[in-house]
Image (cartoon, rainbow, N blue to C red; front, side):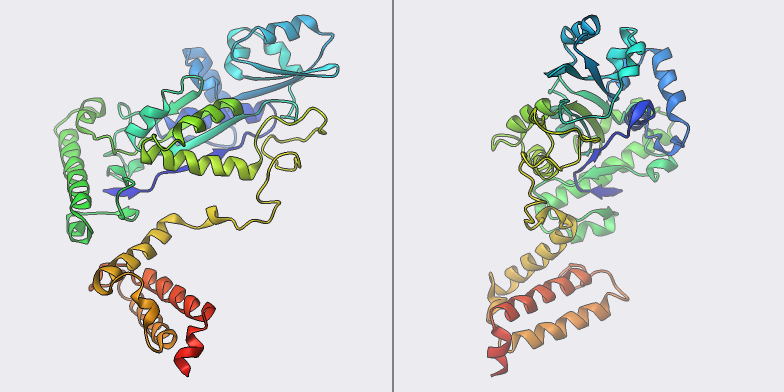
Length: 393
């Protein structure tokens, strides 16, 4: 059984019709976890199959940006009246942002001669792939204005090799468990009764699911016993204005902690990238995601410390060392150790040496390398506060 942290990935669409098709294929193959079948030339055939079979929902993940002359009133007017399209009139141009399903189902393929990259005058459409549990995904699906593609528990058989012959669950926000593979032998590594219950029930669920498959049930039948915590990747595509409303609801303190964590992290990333509708007097740029626009707040250009680059799963390991230490010695008593700098240096080296033969420290249950990092932070603290000099005196 595997545990993972919730996460997200912003998926940028490349230029041209080829980029549209590749974006559609990536979203569509998430449903059956067939990303391994993506090749350099597979996207066009995949999209053609979606069109032929009537699976228009997947076409919505392909963003289409058109730049029209206002004198082409017939073409401009049909997009103005389409509820799945955003337009922006600037000077003698109409900038259209829509999706490939609109083009195909209305038989407007001839309009693709006006296809352009996303400019500062188009409202950008943004695709995000979430790694999240089933129930958080259910709450995100309530934002109906988005386009969705979700890994199917009906068609995905987790006993297959492409799933590692195991079930994957998402670590809940109340747990300090770290990502990795778990067996029943790991139950004694839990730090609370809540973690023990979560881990033991997940392990039992995997055992029961695989047993049902072995007894001949299909995945669509065996899935009946899957819990809300099962990992169910979800691809969402929407206009920037749709994402703004999403953030208003899911970043609120009233939102579920697991949903709020993902939404807040994604909102921060949007701010760093400078996504949004650009003012009408800005020059053209070739990609919506490029953050060269000076009218939008951009923390990367402002040279602010990029806390989002910290690997949260590793920070969590270090936090567990602090937790175990506080249980034994009290909060922050490590700051009062005589000759602390040298003693933490010695402890760092001991844990580094021990990590070569054992991943975990038997005494604390923490990773040796996490304790290396903890001791390095302790040394840094002593150095910044001149404690190392005091201890030498």
